[in-house]
Image (cartoon, rainbow, N blue to C red; front, side):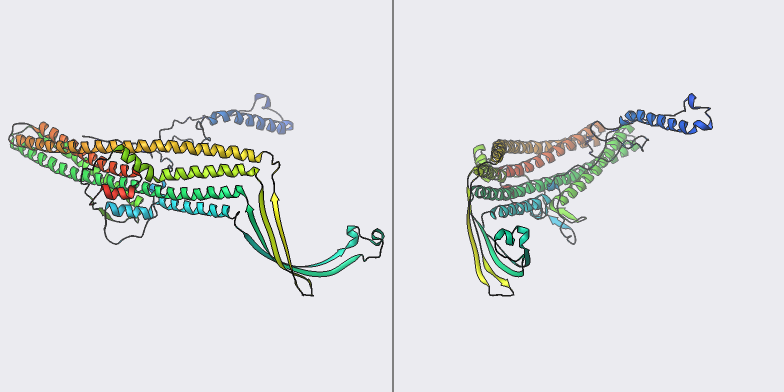
Length: 528
């Protein structure tokens, strides 16, 4: 029996705790037998010594702290349980979704339907779509530095001025003047225009923001490809687990028939009891594998429902049967050419490189002068005399940076570093795409060969099982040969299921590596 053991992330390792014995404190002998006069002094000394003992015990308690973290709570003195649930780790947003509304009855879900639902409800894709809006908002904020800014304001003022406060007196002027002017009132209503005529730094920052928007859009398309890959993985895994359920049920039925036959022969006295026991053990093993296969299939369906965004508790069935169809060969050069032209993450990296180049130009533009225009126009008049007159002001400003404390130099160094990092990431991604394409092609070629061999092996194993059952029914052999034949069939069927899954997953991986996941699934899974 093939028992698979998987690592359980919720199983915490057993932690050895160190129990610290209680420390008792006894008053020094010198303090015992003192009279009432020295009671207060004795109490003070007792408290001091107790505090010292507590401080001395603190390093021992500190040993309970983990190597790189905080100390454990001193209130828990018992032994830790053997199994404790670990804190849930951060999951990829592509493994979650925003659930849709439930559908009455049992939903029939095909691979194409699952992908379509995933492209609408998957959390990773929804978050990537909002990243586009964030980049667009940043671009408009940067572009506002080049666009005209128009505002208006209206105010009314009542004033009374003490001229002596400003040094205007009859003695200083040499002529009699009033000490106080006012009260008087006036109003002013204007529209103000601010326009940048030339700012090379703002122009390059706007170009960089535009490229950032393009990068976010490419990342969104790349997220769609990732969703197709995630949905395809979950769907194919569920199909494989369902096939394991079906083969486990068939093996269980065969094992039950052999056990019944061995029991009948033992009762008739034509076969020893060891044959019946051996057949019963095989029957129970097949029961266990059948139960495990059903559980794995149920869990795989739950994972698929989370990825595609089905409502919690939604009943659904898978319509695909994982048929095998050989795929036409694709050369490495042709695949790489398609990948570099279509991979959305590569296009996003190119946009990031252009954005970094514009950012470097914007940083260097801090040395250049800028020209701006400020103008306003409105009406103003004294109050209550409202014979308003038109007023305006136009000002052109040339700003020439002379010394800015090496701020521009620092911005340039930082921009150059980011540009170099972006270029290195682009070259690394270029090499990664080459590896992805070659790996997908190798996996596809190997999987197709494995399917052919595994299919032939299933046929041979079935024939061996049939002959072993016939030999056992004729009394030529015992159940050892039958059990071995059953195990050979189980291994052959598992190998065939795994090779089918590997072939289908290699196709989706190739579509993802080419950057044509949505179109590739339709091309590589025709009729599904």
